[in-house]
Amino acid sequence: MSEFLHMGGHGIYIWPGYALTLILLVYHYFAPMRKTKKLKKDLIAYYQSRNLR
Image 1 (cartoon, one colour):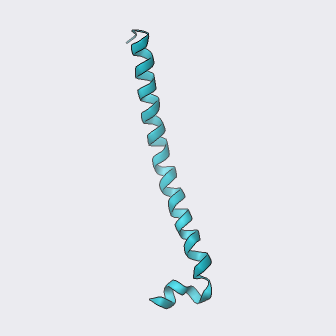
Image 2: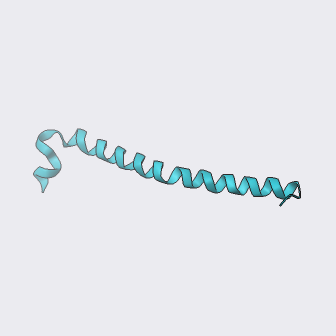
Image 3: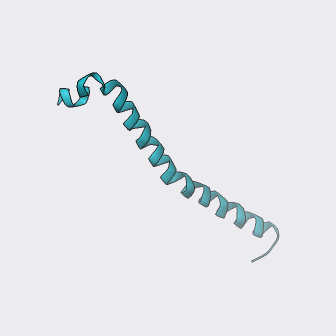
């Protein structure tokens, strides 16, 4: 297992690359959901302030 993690001396470069990729994939998955939620909230507030339905 240690040799697998070490990857022939290149693990110091490979694992951070995998970690960064995973972090970015998770961010790009959840960011649009967060923005959509905020947009819905803003639109509701806008229409309520104008007394529109």
